Image (cartoon, rainbow, N blue to C red; front, side, top):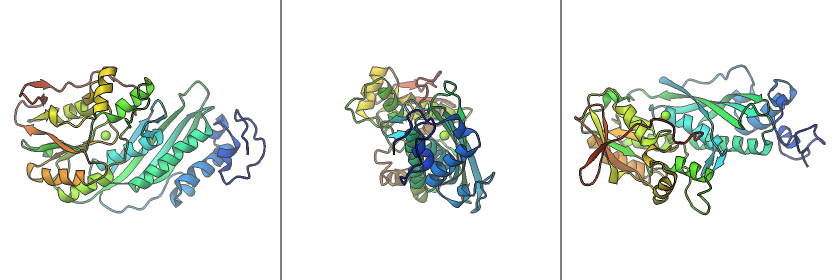
Length: 358
Ligand code: MG
């Protein structure tokens, strides 16, 4: 069944198994966000049919979900990335993984997500469908349900393609207590793999550098890996997903106003050769580049080897490493130490090196 090219009046009713909203229109129209018939069709035939689940299918004003108990972690994040599809992922995978990871690093079990779409009129319907399917696949991978959503269509020229906001709820089991206040001198700092992959993969694609190269974004939900680590290292002090601003941003946020400092051993930080190479070409420090599938953990010394082993045993942690430790002095500073013992301050990024990255 052919589509009307510009999303005009449908040429005929679809006979395919594909959803009618998706198969009848080549691109998103303003009416798909109007709250009327086309909106309902898009919601039911694309979002409900892809995301599934009773809560969403009810189409009530709010999802009513079970509470498995424990404290509630609740977060939101908006996503904007150019290009929408990049090596190793797309905005949909990013939107789900980003929110799952924000919950998981609080020690929560991510459980429910909402998804709000801001779509520019004229956005390609097939592309929207691919994004939605990617969100569903990522949600399944993470074991979370998308239970509520919203769609708005912006007039042509008044939005830039597609923005997705996801909010998430997770439950923190009793006994889990994480935070920078629990960190002590002597603790070890771990990451689950190579840094800078996402930022450099997206940027090199934008700049046309990645032709034939195998650099991919690391975008992935980390709740499975985190659960595996916490099972063998129950006294993990603190976790944060290393996203925009990279290790430099996280390192500086962690030490802020603390009575201890953080030391990174530069030779211990895992970085792909190709990331090194492209970083140089792009003039970007890989320690400041974004990640979307990396977690920094601060773990007591006596649990650090077990934590590292659990990370390496997980597919998303094969290149995990202990990259530094917590030191008594200097207080409130993040340092990078070279193999020769020289030190420099891990500078906080001042402005965004890579706009529209996540
Ligand atoms: Mg975060």
